[in-house]
Length: 242
Image (cartoon, rainbow, N blue to C red):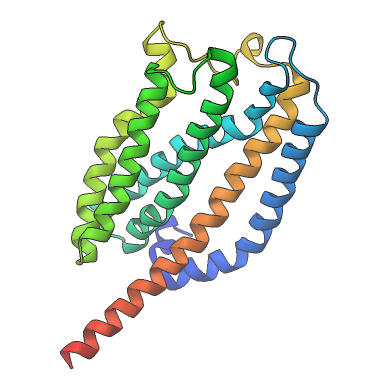
């Protein structure tokens, strides 16, 4: 079985219909477990108090905001190279989900930053690059809406996605690039000494898994919708030409 079989719209829709119920149930279970456990059954941090519990929303949302753009980058490259319409539509479908995660990360970061830093916003390298990433998301969505021809829109948004990927990388590694800045280092790391305590770590993993599965479910649903919308658009064009 080749991965390229799923570039066929009918094959993609049939596969998505088969896996969506399982992904949706797992997403709901992981999210409820992580958020309820994290917010109601973990202790306050000795420095940050109850504010630390914002990580169960902020960290997964920030991770998925960047990974959503990475997924869009991959599917955009596939479109530019292979011209598979499903890949372009998958990138388009992921953008509203990614911009929502980015907004959640920015808002929860501000909520956490106000008591920790004494301000709702600081022009920290990671925060600034994340804000620019958010603006790229908005620009990407606007470009799709502004261009009537879907293939032309897919070409231009793919190029925009390539450019915006620079800021996705900066958002992830800004703390490593610049030693200065208010933003703390990574909450999760391959280095066990840098990870947070297990009492916060385990429910956080459930929250991250929930956000990942939620992203997959939403992108599958939205990609199916975009495929059907493209079909309707093609039918309308035929009727106008008839």
